[in-house]
Image (cartoon, rainbow, N blue to C red; front, side, top):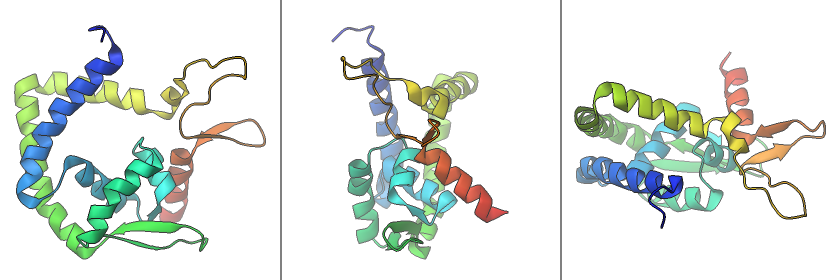
Length: 179
């Protein structure tokens, strides 16, 4: 593959960083993907799986794969959603208890990464990564063939033609219920 390929470079870097965080969380039998899922669910939950997948910039099937071990360990639970057709994920007390230790181990990995890269460079990298994942950047798409323009992952077109993501909808819903 081309050494100038943005995708390859980002994937290699994320694999390396994931290994660092996974190593820190291994003693409590947690992977960084599961840690992130628990943290986001605790912050947003209870939350339906599709909006959570979009907040995490993850497809629904991958989210389901990552949720399953958390459910089996009793760290999270799925309950009937507000509209009775969906299921909502929430963190259990056991999950919150584990997060106390997990956050300490996450902090160790975070400090190690920042020591190696430098705090300013790590901060700049996080900012760049956040900008790539922002709703404004979700328009990154490859032009399709003659059938029309490609549609970015996770976007819905309203009847007024406005594009919104389920992430936007989930965040708006959380703001309106928290006030």
